[in-house]
Image (cartoon, rainbow over all chains, first blue to last red; front, top):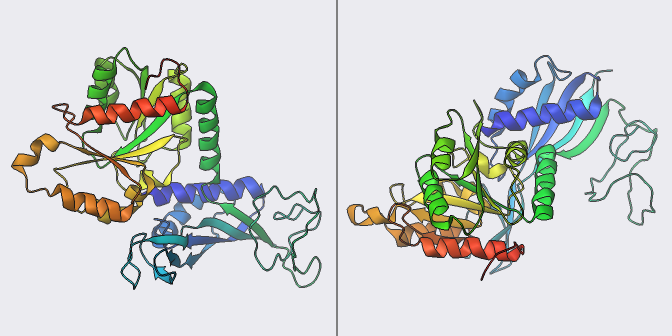
Length: 110
Length: 268
């Protein structure tokens, strides 16, 4: 399960950026085509945050829909999976969003 | 200091969100409209905008590996597959067949044991075993450690045999020159569409164990059509690491790669 490694990266990156400040809330942007499962991140977060400045922090995940541009008909289509077909039948889809794996912001304790 | 733009203020709203692909030290003029409510009104100074890729640290280490490899004229390949597709057998055969022509090195990733590294060494090649424990994939620092230990000379080819897993390794850049997914005809024809992230992330597909085709109902055409659908740019080699069938094309590609980086002794 790579979500454990992803969550460890989140905790390490936030700790590195904020130093000793206590963190209350962490906001992530996770694309639907990123290959990362939000529920698994939530499961791992509490464990990874334990005994760090993120201990007890709330994890907020904003899911970014997958979108692709069809090279054949020019339409923009929504995707839930990194492979798909346009309504016109073409598989020539260039993904334009949905691969995000970002730490958007954090809220620190007052 | 504002964590987003580096100015001396505490955090402030940067709206609308804009992507910065440059270091944001304000050492230059901005000619694009920021439109943010700069400082002091209505912002929450407990919010820190980080706007950072989660895998930034791994990607940084991967970029460092890539720089080191380029500087040395060393080619690294990341081999990934489900467990049991024959990655180690493919490497053993490659080592034996290219012995004396290309300096080969192997970084082995497995959860436990040094069995694969032992097999590679027995085939006549220096290898480092990295045990990931609970980890399901190699990360860039693992390759860095392997390169430090192996110290490959100019012109060498380093194979990274990732942990057998068609899901997790696809996400982690190691700094390799190319990514290779190995599948075998004893697996399902639909593997590429069931594990699209992996097949989409790779440059080359090796279909192994083709010597077994007469005994199976595996439809090579259907498998390749699935792979093509996920990644039209995949270069495909159908081989048997056991009998050697199809391996000349695979070796041809390895030689091409070394030519591209101008490795000494590389021949067309």
